Amino acid sequence: MNLKFTISYDGSAFFGSQKQTNKNTVEDELLKVFKALNISTKIILSGRTDKDVHATKQVFNCKIPDFWEDLIKLKEVINRKIIKSINILKIEKVNDDFHSRFSAKERTYRYLITTKKTNPFNSKYITYVKSIDEELLQKAIKEFIGVYDFLYFHKTGSQKEQTKREIYNTKFYKYRDIYVFKFTANSYLRSQIRLMVGFLLAINEKKLSIEDLRNQLRLKKHIFKIPISPNGLYLSRIKY
Image (tube, rainbow, N blue to C red; front, side, top):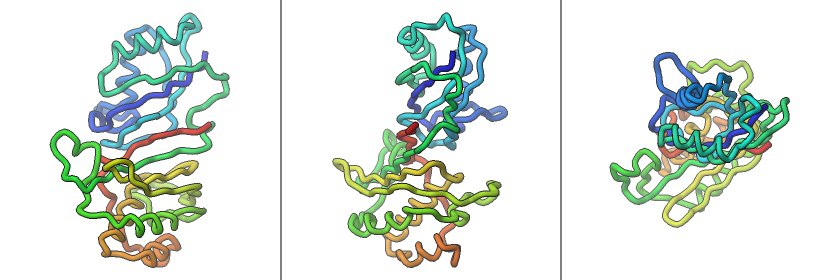
């Protein structure tokens, strides 16, 4: 049977989500547990997250033997056996044609920042910014909505023939003492969100302008090239 898993994980514990040679990943840890349960399967993630990028609701699907019909028990067993940096939130039976990557309609990411200095216990999960111009950032982030060629918001050396993407919605808001950048799109290029957030924070610091952002989005100038730290980035929702 084909099962859909919704999981969360602490990205600082892994070299990304997808399996890599000689590097421990989220997929590696999941496969270890399945192997311990005598389940031979292939994991299909909704999309990859890089090293130090977290997930509150990542999704994957895989096929397992029908005798594991008690999905509540399966969830309990996996969570008991798996490394504590990963948690299974939900397991659902889905149609055989469900594909966690290709069936996805929307992917939402959040990037967290704070004006309170970080410490050894939270520095892996949020990025410190000295001051925030909330009104300016709320205005600037809206520039990303629409269809653009994100060639200049794409990690150098990552080969993609098609660099056009559509961003459906964006938002910058405050939740208690945390500021949140929120992006919703069908898919993203590698390091795209980290480059977008980095550009926005450069605008926040008055080093760049909204007009600079428009010029980079329209491929007139390649101004900002260095992705911000991945520590504050979370894959937060996949919509099907």
